[in-house]
Length: 264
Image 1: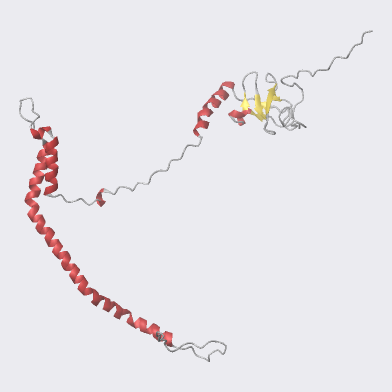
Image 2 (image 1 turned 135 degrees about the horizontal axis):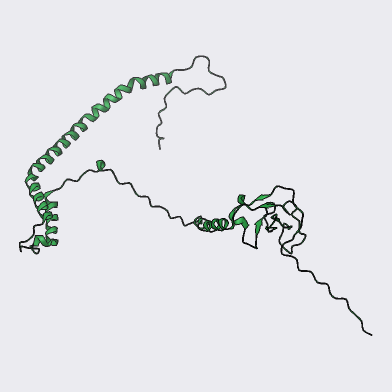
């Protein structure tokens, strides 16, 4: 006698996109109002983010009336799934071309990469250079120009006579001539400059002596100018208020105290 065992039930393979004639009564979703990364218009793989539950949902009916497929708010195979009733079967208005959407998505990649945080390097604080009118030129001396002229002669081939022209004659050095002329001019003017410097030094010393001699007299006159105000303040400070002295108050010291050292 043979016995038959019932066949084990197997779950049917679900369709990739659920097709239903039901349509949500809410206004349709405009594809152009979404960001480029919130919708996928790849032919045969149309998906978008549900505005109500922020879940990627397939778009069905691309050849007729596009709408969101019935979906849950959580991930697949999660316990106690909750149906997204607000976004299920909601119509979608596809007003964006696939090529335009793909171009926008490609152009957004470098823009997103440029917003990445970069390492902030502290900018060194540099003191601003003074203006030309604020620079005080340093006076040249004959000795400084002479040293510069000697250094130039040691480096310049024209000054050494080692450079010649087409006619075989040595070429002149314009920089050497300029330094030589400057040295001769300063050398001739050096006695006059020395006299001027000595004159200003003597005047400076004379001014300092006069200022030091007039300082005590000026200080005395300044004290004399403020002396009436000081005496007036002392007089008002010594006056006593009118009326009887309060019984519960301490007496006001009138006599001036002069502290003395204790005898050992």
